[in-house]
Image 1 (tube, rainbow, N blue to C red):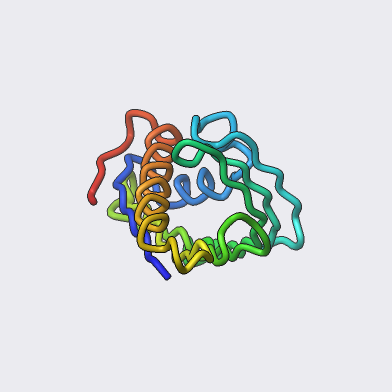
Image 2: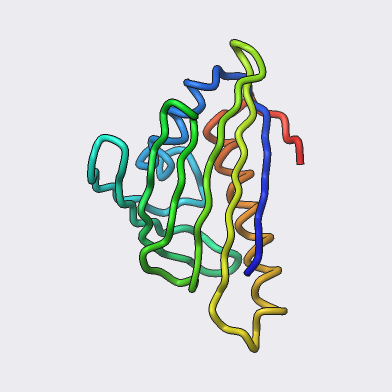
Length: 148
């Protein structure tokens, strides 16, 4: 299993950033990496979403269960089905002040092909990190500063 971590500082309140990240459906119109997102609300704090994204030289798709914790500004996701064997993680938003916050993406994944893991998983890690960076930059255009 491999970990992907990415943190970015944006010029938005923590609540504004949470609301923007939580609006998965808007990703397809704001993010070039995202081809489509279909969201089905399960409850006030839970949804299922189906994603299709550009991934390296191809496409990747999956369905995930999303848990929204508005109090702690955290969104957890767990793949239900999809191209990877395991894909799970969270988005965390932390206020720096009233007008600035950090957005952290932390995920774990396994492509499910042990004989090719040493080749595929570093490529997948790089593609996921690149897609997250691009999505955040596009969602918060002119409001970002990458941390790492």
